[in-house]
Structures are given as structure tokens and as C-alpha cells.
Length: 131
Image (tube, rainbow, N blue to C red; front, side, top):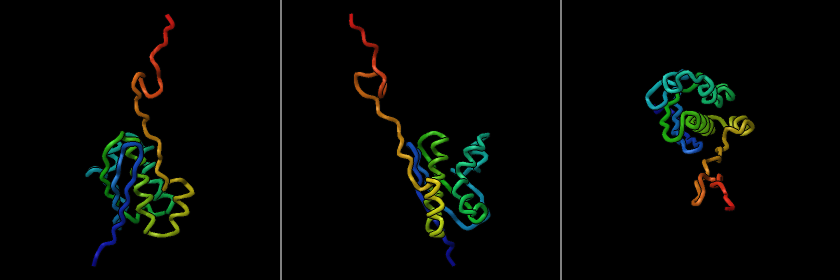
């Protein structure tokens, strides 16, 4: 007997999360640490991660194992949320409408703009002096 496993890749800024959903009791393991350990005292990020599961009413149906790297803690949470949403699609086709309406299947395309030569930063210029 094989255990059905669902996978999804989530991205946000420079963070990339590989998510595996396995039938279970609702445990979340991120880089071999629990969500409480990983996010510390930032419950808002934990809520962000669980948003797709809450919307589809599957909070306690799956154990979630995540490998995430790149970016900061907030963009990693966004990447995990995106990965979970994408992994939930093959579970049930009705999930797609719910997740799409909340914008969880769309990859956030905003990334840091590169620095241009002859300038201080991406858009900031050096101070102009006429004389």
C-alpha cells in the first residue's frame, strides 16, 4: 500500500519552498524544525502559512514537510503558503476556485530592483551640483 503524497513548489522574492503534503494530523515541519521554533514569536507568519489549509478546511488532514531556502523569514512564509496552495490542487479540483479567488495560486512577482551604474541605488541618484 502506497501513501499518497502531494508536492508543490512555492516562490516569493528570492525564497523557494518545496512542500510535501502527507495524510496525517496537521503537523508542520520546516527544515526539520516545528513551525513554532522556526517562526519564533511571529504568529502572523504562522497564520500566513496555514491560510490555504484553513480556506479549504483541511487543517488537520495533512502533515506538511517543507524545505525552504533563500530570502528572509517573511518571504519564506509567503513561499511556503504558495507551495501549500499548489500542493492542494491535485487533492480536490474544487480547491482551485477557492484558492484562486484569494490569490494564493498567483506567484508574487515583486523582486528587488537591481542597482544601476552611476547611481547610488536602483533609483536614487547622486546629488547634482551645477557648480
